[in-house]
Image (cartoon, rainbow, N blue to C red; front, side):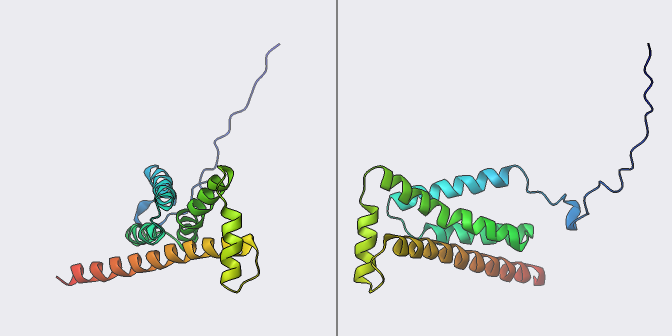
Length: 155
């Protein structure tokens, strides 16, 4: 018993990704996700060592990188969340599981600030501060890169 199979050539024109500027396929190169994960770990370790400003620095670096490689708004937003609130949130969770009194401290801080005495309120506000730091750094990094890129073109 023989089985014959007809082979047809596939129309690959519909499967080709849309061309983006510079001949890129629209995907991040392999080192970029690894670099983003490394920076997120550095931000988390920095938060552990009370270096609370590192989301701003990481956002600045992400802004320069994003302006240089012309990454889109959605990727930049995802990167800001990865570099700001995620490391701080993971750190708070790890410290809570290790036995630190994160919840009690957050309730006391909320009460002293005149907010409802809820740990969730303070923790959410803390994560928003991390996101705002990363966003401000990103904006500043993009602005710096564009300013210096324009200056280099004029020279």
